[in-house]
Image (cartoon, rainbow, N blue to C red; front, side):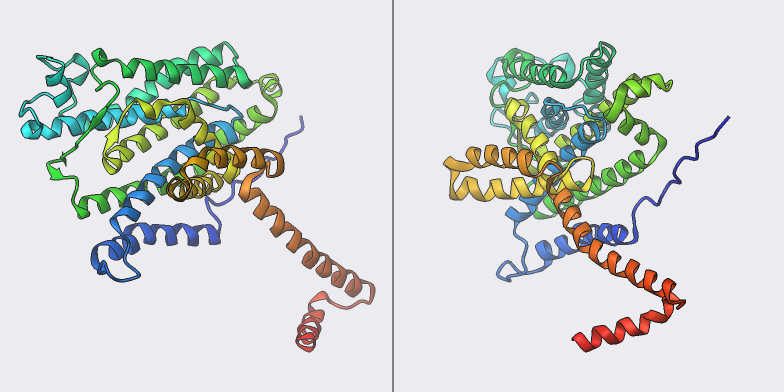
Length: 403
C-alpha cells in the first residue's frame, strides 16, 4: 500500500508577515491612541475623532470581509445574506445599550422610548437578558450562530449550491428585514435603536471610550485574522479548499462535506455578528436597513476587490472600497453607486484574483528574471567546473561597474 506524504505544515505567518502584524498591532493599540488623545487638535499629526470613528467602522467591515473570504474564497460558497448576521449582532448590542439609557430617555421611563411611544407596558420576552452585559456577549455569538446553523443544516443537507444558495440567502435576509421593520416585533421598527448613553455604566460619547472601542475592534480584527490563518493551514482548511475545487471527489474520497461546510458557515456568521456588535456603539445607531440586500452584496464586493482566498485581500478591499465611499459620498454623492457597480464589473473582468492577486503577479514577474539569471550562472559554473559560490564576487564587481 502506497502512502502519500502530506505537505508539512508551515508557520502561521512568515517573518515579514509577523512584522506587518506587529506593526498593525502597535498602530491600533499605541499609535492611534497617542495621535488622538495626546497630540493637540491643531497639530497635523492629530487623529481626529471623525477619523477614529471612520477607521473603527471600516475595521468592523473588514471583519465581515474576512468572514466572507472563509465561506466564499476558501469553501466556494457565495453568500448574499451575511448582512443579516452583522445586523443580528448589532441588534443584540443595541438592546443592551438601550437598557443602559435607563430613565435618561425623553419619557423618563424604564422602558425604551419607542416602547413608551407605542404604549407598551412591559418588555417583550426576548428582552429578558438585555440588561446583562455578560448575557449580551453570549447572545452576540449565539443568535447569529444558531440561525446560521439551522439555515445551513437544511440548505447544505439538501445540497443547494451555486446561484441557488446565493438567492435563498438573499431571500432570508430580505424576509428578516421586513420582520424587523414591524413595530410589534419590539426592535424599534423603521427607526431601530439610537440615542445610546452608556456602556458598562461609562458614557459612550467620551473620547476615551471611543478610542477604547477603536482599539478593541482592531484587536478583534487581528485576532480573527490569526484564527483564519490557523484554520486554513490546518487539515480542516485543506478539506475546505478541496470541497471548493471538487466536492464530488471529496465525497468519493470518504469525506462528508456537510460538517465542514456547516462549521465554516457558522464561524463566518459569528464573525459577522461580533463585527456588528462592535459597529453599533461606534456608529450610534442600528436599524433594519443594515439587513438590506445591498449591504450583503457590498461584503462580497470587498472580498472580490481585495482578492479571494488570500485573507489579507478582503481586509484590504474593505478599506479601499469604504475609504473611496466615504470620499465619493461627500464629493460626488450622486455617482457613488455607479462607481461601485463599475468597480465590481472591472474587477470581475480584469482582476479575477483581486488587488492582492495583481500584486502577486507583478512580484512573480520581477522575480522570474532574477531567478533566470541565477540559473544561468549556475549552469555556466557547472559547465566550466567552477563552484557557483565563486561567481558571487564577480557578480558584485559587475554590478558595481554598471553602476
